[in-house]
Length: 347
Ligand code: NDP
Ligand code: GDP
Image 1 (cartoon, rainbow, N blue to C red):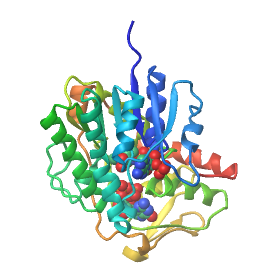
Image 2 (image 1 turned 90 degrees about the horizontal axis):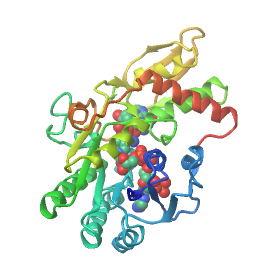
Image 3 (image 1 turned 30 degrees about the horizontal axis):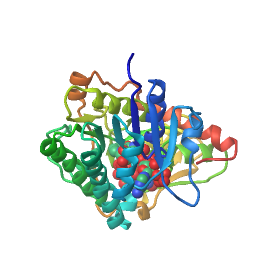
Image 4 (image 1 turned 180 degrees about the vertical axis):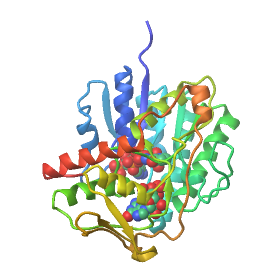
């Protein structure tokens, strides 16, 4: 009989942690998921997926930045696979809190790698790396061997953790893998990220709960995929014969402005753009009402202008391929936000 596999997911209260837990439970894993000691723990994502009381799911309190916690966690959970998704993951905040971001997002994963080295070097390790490491892009599209040039404290911190994962692979033979994932979104995305901010605001405007959506740089281009498909890619990365680094992306890029138009289209509103730079506005073609406005307070000190990834290696070696189009993803997110805002709540 096959042994039941055990997985540890750090950051189960986040978007990817919730979807990955759902996937691994479906696959028959025993899952330990970590959450942080905060004044109000937020389990809304695993509740929305209906897995919070699953008999094979165990939730434990933990902080990535504490080495002892990492060692004790591995000793008690005894995982075969560790997915390190915990991070201070928001680029905007990383400019305000660079040191905290370095401690959590950069050095944090080294605590886990050290714990693996001490407790059981056979544990397979997934590190959540990011396209933000490419930053000021050196090639289009970006792939595994494109040079890095991070443009935010978040990107710099993630790059350190990425190279430490590679280093533990090469130095100690640890099955350490790095998934360089391009932006991936879903109805479970945090509202501080631009896609969810847009779909939540479009739903509120449609329901008469908000007048105008204010945004920063509308020209930034991103390669946006569906998070549920990307966590499946994470799992495939850890099932490979050899530990390696993989890009997961859709190979399509659109501007923030395009995503705003797409989201309004999902509620049958056609937008017209006028003005430029700090004064750009989006108006409803039918009524002439201003629905979108640029507010420079949302600009970043340094911007990543263009991300587009080439997932050919993941397709060839892992059989991974994105399926959901950006239009489908946007529609799904707007519908979820309409439902939530109609019911009077939105996380
Ligand atoms: P989220 O921000 O939704 O989730 C991050 C998780 O990390 C939360 O559960 C958070 O807990 C937890 N966390 C934060 N600090 C600590 C800490 N000190 N100790 C333990 N846990 C902590 O991110 P996503 O789910 O979107 O992303 C998952 C990972 O993938 C992140 O590492 C992110 O940087 C990376 N990534 C994401 C991309 C994306 O487009 N989504 C793209 C590329 C990489 P709490 O709920 O308490 O805050
Ligand atoms: P990121 O790619 O990890 O930084 O993901 P975000 O969703 O936070 O941002 C994507 C892009 O949208 C960045 O280039 C931002 O500058 C741009 N953007 C424009 N307006 C906003 C806004 O109001 N909020 C956020 N979060 N991003 C914005």
